[in-house]
Length: 184
Image (cartoon, rainbow, N blue to C red; front, top):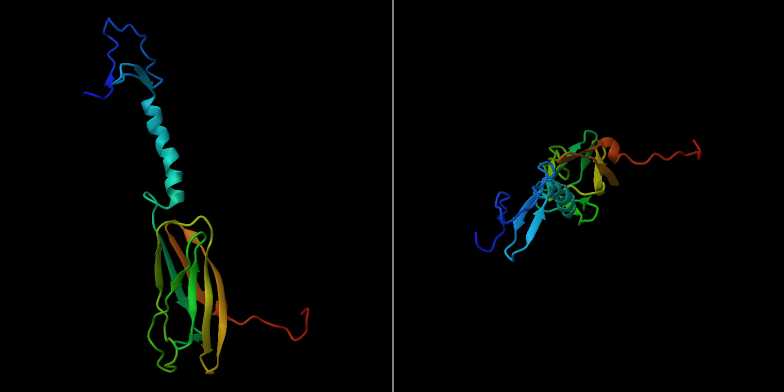
C-alpha cells in the first residue's frame, strides 16, 4: 500500500503510543508523509448520509424519487369543447409550469366536445418544496344547451408520498353564484 495511509500497529515497541479508547471509534494511521493521524471513521460514516441527504433532496438530484402527478376528470353534467382553446397547466413552485394536454374521444351527441376526458400523467424529477396547483381555462358546454362558457380553474394538487392526484369535477367548473340582492 504505497502512498496510502496504513493502519498503525500498537504492538510495535518502537512506537509506544497509548491505545485509543475502543468506544471512541478512533483509528490511528500513519500518513504517507510520515505523520500520525487520528480519525473518527465510524462517526464520519454515520454523519455523512445525514448531511448529504437533505442537500441532494433539495437540489433534486440523485437519491430523490420522481413525483408522478395524475389529473383525472369526473365530469357528468358538462362537456369540454374540443375546438375551443382550453389550456390547463401544472404550476410547480420554483420550476417551469407544465402543460396538461387534454385527450379523449369525441362525444356521440356533441361531436365538437370531448365525450370523455382521459386521465393525464406527468412526471416531475423530484417533489417540489411548495404546493402544486392546476390552473387554466376550460371551455365547457351544458349537456342540453349548446352554449359554451369559460371556466377558470385554480385547484391545489395534494402530494402524498411520490404521487400527487387531483380530480376535476362538475363543482369545480360551476359558475360563481351571484345573488340579485347584495348581502344575501
